[in-house]
Amino acid sequence: MRQFAREEVAPAAEELDRTKSFPYELISKLGGLGLMGIPFPEDQGGGGADTLAYTMAIEELARIDSSVAITVAAHTSLGTMPIHLWGTDEQKSEWMPALCAGEKLASFGLTEPEAGSDAGNTSTTATLTDGEWVINGAKQFITNSGTDISGCVTITAVTGRSNGGGGGAERKEISNIIVPNGTPGYEQGEPYRKMGWNASDTRPLSFDDCRVPESNLLGRRGDGFKQFMQILDGGRIGVSAMGVGLAQGALDEALAYAKERRAFGQPISRFQTIQAKIADLSAQIEAARLLTYRAAIQKDRGEPFTLTAAQAKLITGRLAVRATEEAVQIHGGYGYIEEYPVCRFYRDAKVLTIGEGTDEVQQMVIARQLGC
Ligand SMILES: Cc1cc2nc3c(=O)[nH]c(=O)nc-3n(C[C@H](O)[C@H](O)[C@H](O)COP(=O)(O)OP(=O)(O)OC[C@H]3O[C@@H](n4cnc5c(N)ncnc54)[C@H](O)[C@@H]3O)c2cc1C
Image 1: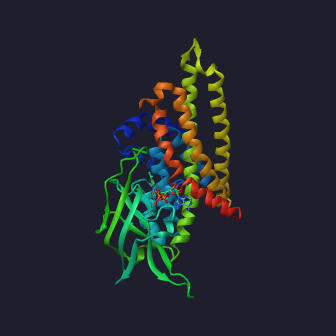
Image 2: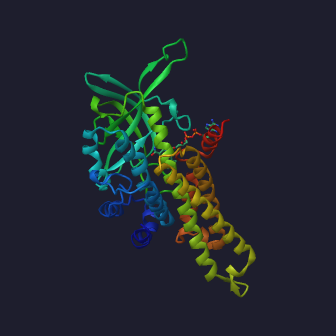
Image 3: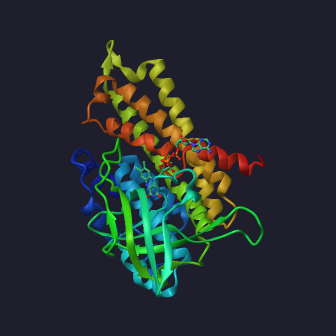
């Protein structure tokens, strides 16, 4: 992945970002190399590798370009993973080979206008009528949902209500349902104009009496909440890898520039204040990388990893924001000019403290895990 990122992604990244163009060619090449399904079984078309290998691959992509990295990460850990984990044999054989080959992209539709951090507040409904789910509602900020190769979105929807058998408050029964692109009643809105991740695809979705077969239910009816919590836990490792990679990419650029740029008759890398920034970043990146790998290793060993993944997500998002800011600072005026990758890196960093659970949500998860 490092070689691919340097040889194929780096030369294209600036233009893709500037023209806000989805990287179709790169995704097709990644699919050809077997990198669009790294952690999935080989007999389903996947790479047969573990979470740690996947984490390192995402890190290397984000070191060069975050738009391509989030496209692969959202496709893998959010879009394809639920089908791998809970799909029936029929669902797997319908979707996994094309998704792992990168011929189709998968997306995960959790966030709604009134359900972001409070993701259980889903108001999209799916009503079972004559053997079909009739879906009504809206989702927003959904990655990979509206490209020419988007194959399906897995959405959370309210499929019933219960009062838990007692006189308590009414509870929503939430389930996951696969909705193929092209299904009548399922529309993708125009892509958002974003601060960063310009070459990735993010759109609002609407469902208006959208009908899919009953067999598109993913996993058990009513397990949707539990399932999406599990998906978010794993997804956080991928997003942490993006933070590590982006911070490392910013340091790579800053270090190279500092050795080259001269002021007061010497390279700026000779100044102690510049050295302190570079030294601090290198130490913090190494620590964040090891924490991220630890979460991946815990997941691979079947150990609990919710706490470590949330800690890694919290640390790496903030580190990416700080590292990219310092890298721009070290570049001086050129850091503010788009031809230099650090300018794009700075814009791409901020979302890492928001997506896949905000920093405040990570703090909640961590505090709960610690017994608060
Ligand atoms: C580029 C991009 C791509 C995305 N891709 C996807 C995707 O593919 N699929 C998907 O489902 N979603 C996706 N998202 C959505 C993302 O996960 C949400 O934006 C995020 O979870 C925050 O939800 P929200 O935007 O509704 O913010 P809100 O929940 O409205 O939060 C607003 C602020 O309030 C704070 N807050 C909320 N509750 C609390 C609390 N209890 N205590 C303290 N503070 C709190 C938050 O931390 C935040 O600072 C994407 C978002 C972006 C920007």
